[in-house]
Length: 98
Image (tube, rainbow, N blue to C red; front, side):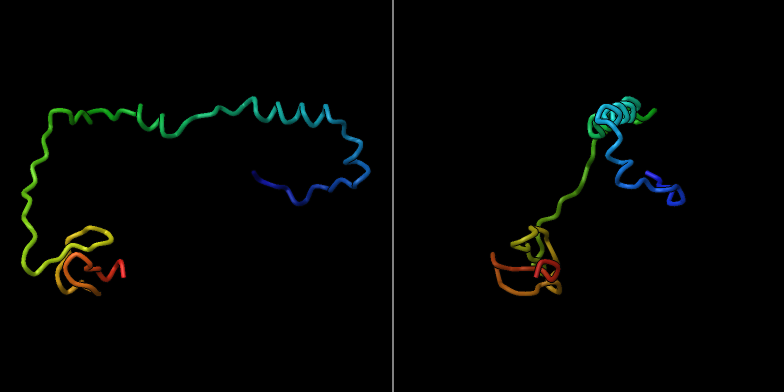
């Protein structure tokens, strides 16, 4: 919300003079123009034209872990031995997780 710092400020006496009803009315007026939108729900219902991928299949060739690679015990990613920070076997940790 933008604030105009050049406007004259109210003194304490003027602030106490404003009635509770006025403040509530202002609050209701501000809220009446706003619409609550759940962003996650809006993103799920968003459909892009030509984006129907229901008939597509993803084919990926998966290779087993090589002899010069290890699986990090923290992030569970397969890294090359040059990324080994500490440990051996099931306690191996990569440089990113160390």
